Image (cartoon, rainbow, N blue to C red; front, side, top):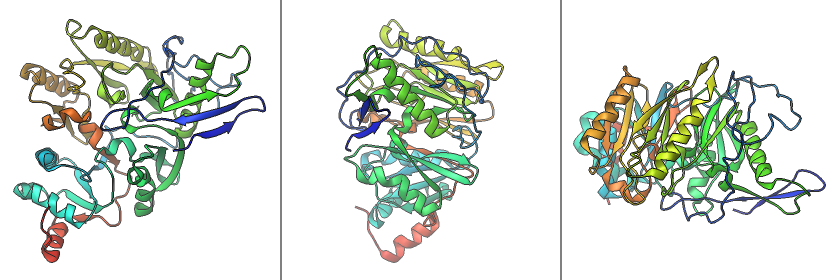
Length: 427
């Protein structure tokens, strides 16, 4: 994508280079480094959604020092809210990963509908073949043809929001080398009647966690993805602070965010996304991973600092409850991220690898069960995804109950009949 040049005043021109970081799942690694973003003052408490603190940015509440009027809508929902469906793509899903899709279908049965996006009728036939042994547990599965480049829906799919006029889809800038993925939000809106809203900032969905009450958590990768170059900085300007101010204010205004908490990403983790170490379970509850400091002292310290920062946030008159979840130490650049989970209605799906210590897996399941006593906690073995730098949350999109499915959606039985009529054999 070409850089966007914006003129904020007669004296200063800013060039926004929308760069994408990551490996395999998210493109080439980012070269530009942003100065230490943790020199800013500690977070101020979020006392109410009507307050506008820009947390951890080192900047004032607004350019004028005044708190702007805050509207309840649009509102980004929490993933723990009521869901209509979970959405997956099989665009480049390889046959040796088919058991993961089958396990997802079987374990969501009775909890939430599943919508599978496929590129063409041959791919539909292939998917039906993969799932044929689970036919009795596929009544909740639906299909829709939508051409995509990759399976990592969370990164490029629309961010749904509730508005006064109905559902809206926030469409962020994405990886320019994947045009089908990049155009997906707009095509989704055309197929569903959802309001399309362009957001001229880069943000990958795995790096935005929302509590449903206008509090958002991201890592400082957001400043790298939206790197601002000052062509002619004014004398005495603190360029790093100004960069953070502009990005933070732009995102909070575009998405109606009342408070943005910026955390440190894990080291030696390709995506640098927040969902690799944290997840909201309720408006006032968030889980943050922990690792054994004897095995990985650097990341153990990062996670402890992130947890402490979140503990300083308040929701109304209550502090945000931060729960710790021990996870296995990294294996090279591969992480077993128990927090990269899917929450859908009364179900939580936790990703695991076959190398994870069984006692650690069971401990994580117990912690989730204690925090979500009315949910079913199930694990999904994603070992074959280990080198791809993506897990369950990365694969999926939560469709809120108030959002519509595409008009072209067909049921499992309709898909089976279509396959019989066209006599298309799987690839």
